[in-house]
Image (cartoon, rainbow, N blue to C red; front, side):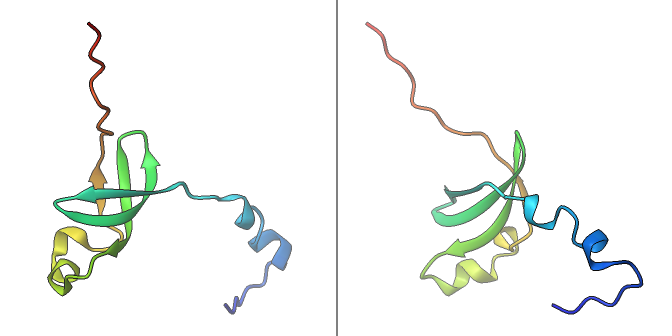
Length: 79
């Protein structure tokens, strides 16, 4: 990476290594993908894990796409 700036490199890079994304693997529509948490209810697609080339051509699965996400917890059956 080359940065051309009149500002000192320390100022430009301040906080650069503090960002640590939270990655998860989920399955959506039968396609396993890696996502990054945006906030409590949304995730951004980072990459796909699929052997099917058609999945990579689907515009809904394009990396960078933000999707609504709600974890699916198993129901607690007490009896």
